[in-house]
Amino acid sequence: MKFCWSTLKVKNLDESVSFYEEVLGLPVNRRFVAGSGMEIAFMGEGETQIELIEVKDKNTTLVGPDISWGFQVESLDRMMEILEEKGIDIMEGPYSPNPSTSFLHILDPNGLKIQLVERKAEGKGQDA
Image (cartoon, rainbow, N blue to C red; front, side, top):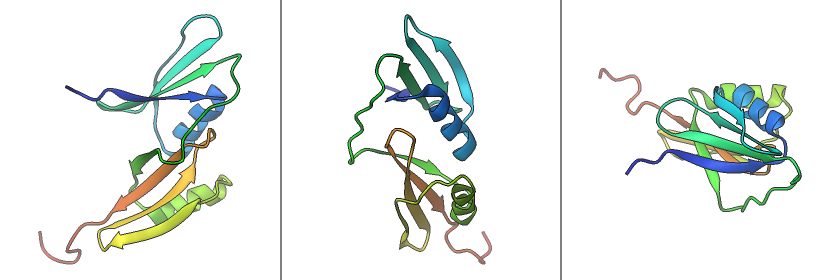
């Protein structure tokens, strides 16, 4: 079995696509109209993608507080600069539960919790 994608019904597809492209760097893989009043965008590269669905006559989404999507970033410090430039508030963190991991949480335009994780090389400064 292979995990293919995670789906989120969104309030505004253009706004959500912009967030995932501009903030998280996920490219649009494909985008299409899927019937009357419905548009879908698949985002990301590789085997696992995000599917965003906008239903035109539905302008609310239900996102539970116990669900989050995690994305590894190269530099958490650089991401915090980007978040500040884009006016995106940090919801929680940054936290460092151990020397090799730091993370923080933000919200996407639909209220979904996004975890941004930096994994640091263990034993930095030592020969590999």
